[in-house]
Image 1 (cartoon, helix red, strand yellow):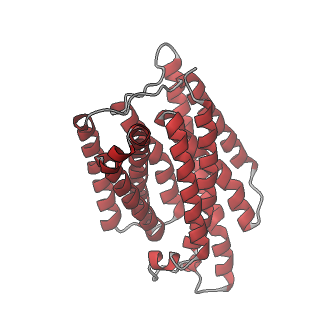
Image 2: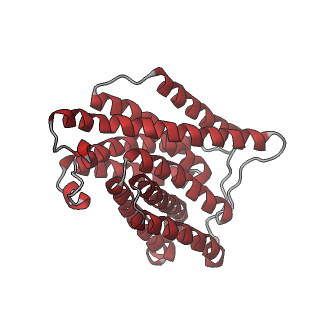
Image 3: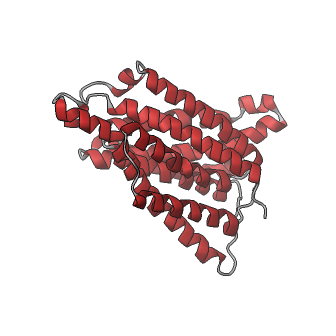
Length: 299
């Protein structure tokens, strides 16, 4: 098997840190009234900054995971952040997770295991010339641009949050694939990495993706934005991993059918678990709103 188990362990640690960050940031965002600027309110929130530190730690460990493993191993495993975030969200609102939620969590974990074991993702190469990056980069830019435009111009809060979350998730996926590329550049020639276009594209996609994610949190419900971000990030990374980095999974015989089913299970359970997490995260606000008509729950 070509899967790097150190990469698996590091990806799970990264997912845990991202989960801690997600719970902290979503809790802070839920307390911001609709008429108030989300960004200016969040930068004054100590809880939000704790989440930012968690994101930083998660990304550092993600870099280490991508250093020793392929994008097709690391990125799907980051979806397990939902498994860590669910009990933390439930604890935050003082409730017990229902049995159906745990069943979905087990199904998603099993699908991930099947994908890694049966798919047996292999590492590709990171020295592709810019011409091979050009078409995939344009494709990602067009999809992100259309999704972001729809998220900024449409009127339905749920649709806006979904589109902005999808745009942010795709950029996070692009950033993850570029991280794999940049880490290999640093390993070979640190000075070259400082001047490489990949480094600045990585920074730009990360910054814009983060902004779009925060906008998604602001304009609509978390239950709409979270599934989009969670699913689109590994999809975006896998797209670049296959089209540019030449990473591959096993497709002969019945393996392809098993992998397609596993991916479908991952997507469905991710959506359902994301909605559960969003409901858990927003419940304290709803309870507070029962006694405080001016609370965010009246939004």
